[in-house]
Image (cartoon, rainbow, N blue to C red; front, side, top):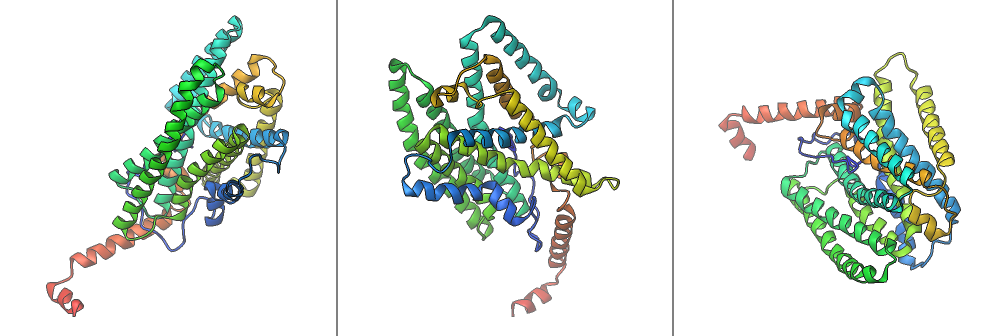
Length: 387
């Protein structure tokens, strides 16, 4: 979610006071693992070990696992945006407009057999991917910050999001550095790539300053689950820099895992509100449907999500149609995320946080009562309390 896909979540809304029940999306441990903790546990030791290649898993297995889970997270977003007519009509541009335009583009590319159009579609998809990863990292920070009682102020948001924008720039220059084969073009691109790689150190420092400012302002360290996605972005891109496409597959897998618990929580909350639904059975059917659809897309649209990957790994090239369909799904996903994961939207907050709202409301009410009591204290009572 880039909460968005790009999806932009915002912490502008006032965050609730932290509650003793430690509100979470699924559970504190599952949240930590999904939001990036699991990827840190796996990737940090591998990076520190200095391994030049990922020898613990075959590329074929990695492609299949990544594609299956990644496609499942696409299907989960479709479940939300296409769940009923009201939702579709409310977001007509993302639900209808964008798919129609891209379908026309694909038809033109196939009719003309234009390699240029295919490459252009791929470039757009790759650019959005960079926006999506960093946008989702901010969305995770805003969401888990909200659950932990933290609302980043404007200066903190600017610093943290600036650090993520620098990583976005790194992702784009890495893609150009990797994909371009023309020596005349590659030389200046490589120079830019080296400069942006050095600037990522500044990006890390900016984000760290933003987090420290939040710590000093509130008097407590930001919630771990809000820190992990920011740190994970740097580790993920270190993996891509070290292992190239194999690293990118691992990052895509981690990104999809990071995303999936959010639509799962929305599904649980909506199902729980329907007294006629048996929650356990409903969620089993939900998970089975996502995996079945993901498997169908993986089989019908074979190969990795990017044609440059098939070339780099020596996977046989087929028709352009499967590749274009996967580009379609990737690009469309960024638009759907842009409308379904804005935490500033009351409806989104209701669907995502319905399971903790009673706790938050109670905590908020207690805070208001305490504030009211403090205001009504007499000067004499305040004086005696000081003594």
